[in-house]
Image (cartoon, rainbow, N blue to C red; front, top):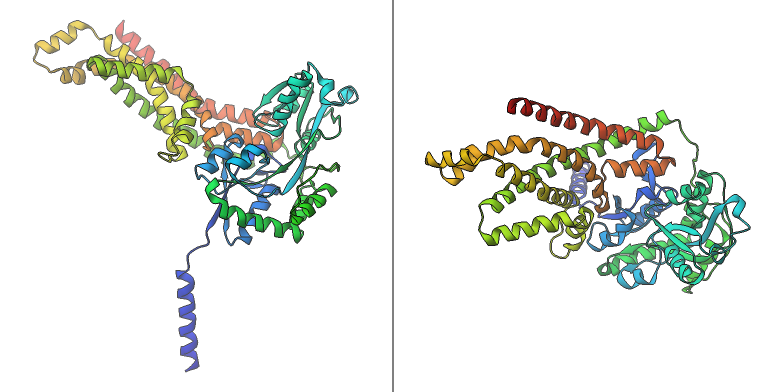
Length: 499
């Protein structure tokens, strides 16, 4: 009897395991374009990410009994994305600032960084402080503590702040003489000095700051759980092990951990470190292309599908708007004209932000849907003008003849005016499709990883835009040149028929 009982127990255990719900996810967002040592595409598998924030997120998830899932988001959109619920936790060099602490549920500071000045080697002694840079151009990332310091120094010392959207181009511009200094975190500066020759750190730390995780204000309970996990990681040495692996550990971090664990406020610590990512060996360009090609092809597919769907929406809506402006009453014509002018007169980037973030309290659009609507409706305004010009270009004699035959206005539009207008409009619309294909690069600001964003991530990972830029340009040309050739063939064919 023991065997049947044992078998029954095993069956019940298996059934219980099968019925148990899968562990919840800990969705965390960051920008892989930020690169090592924070978050970067793994050179061995570009579909995955690595970095000390990746390992921290994974360890926190395990300690909370969850499964980590990475969500790509532009760095400047982390706060907005976490607020609208795109992910639970924002990481990746997120700084602890009063405004963020007031508006969000912010974790305890898990890393202490120093703001340092990078200059060209010969200028190291001359530009030893911000006050010595009066009238000089100093670059940094927008929306950071460093930007606030430079803005204040501009008013006080006459420094000329220059804003960048990434941390790669400032150091390249410094080496090329377009900037006189760059003020950024010592972690970022150390990586840049290893990548761009001829630069040096010129002065002691300008300021001290901390990296934190950010959660939506309604997620304070989850924030407290994350804080508990971070404290235990500080106490048992897990955080130290991660930071040592990524070469961003120094004695200042140990003192910072002690203060956090003791509940004291963190103070300024001046301890030099040796930041940098492990595995800095640069592979040949051919090997890089082979590894990143699948990611590029996937991003190119997103670009192409998004562009095709957006153009279909633009042509359809544009045709309806044009018909309304021609056949509608005064109020409808006025409303549609106003919509066209407002849409054409405002940047598509602003429209994307409004659709994705501005309307989040009313309707939470999927990122791809918001990108589709943003691009499609923006281009619909332009296509409506093409449609309107083509419709009004049809000979009045043909319209009168059609009406004399007893056709209604709807039938005239459907069988006479519409087909002729389509023939006149198709070539310029094809040209607009090429432009839309390139404008699709803007949707990366709302977390859609299309071809240009993938290029930026690749470039940040390998420290150069040459190979990624050439590969991206080749893919854009492969998609756009056939369309441009089609437009020319259509124009030539119809020109011969008209002649």
